[in-house]
Image 1 (cartoon, helix red, strand yellow):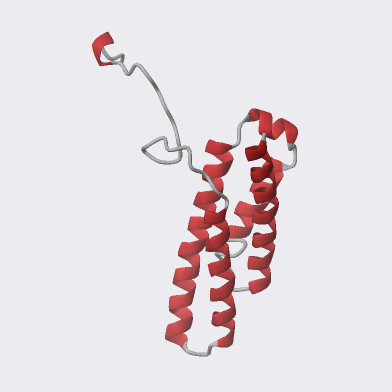
Image 2: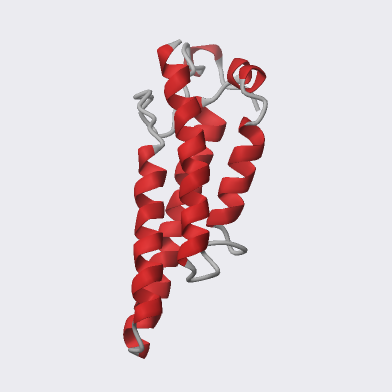
Length: 134
């Protein structure tokens, strides 16, 4: 269905939120991943079943936030010229989101997995800041 001409938008914009602010930063994903690592360490150190249950729930929420923030960067910030200049970028995002997902930090309370996730986010961050200098 087509809108009548007077109702069609004149300008189309897109961003990671409803308001095209253009603000992107991999720090959002890093902070959530740091939280996952800290929660995993506390989970491993505790034998309190209620605390451990709460830890897992919060860790899983943080893992979803990591994936969200990475996907926003991957799909909204980075453009074709970035992927041409940094051919490893797609692989880094794929590896990072999988490390945040059910087969990684979301599904396990292993600080080593969270550390691997932080490493991938750091690699993405380095590329991100290089692109901001261009």
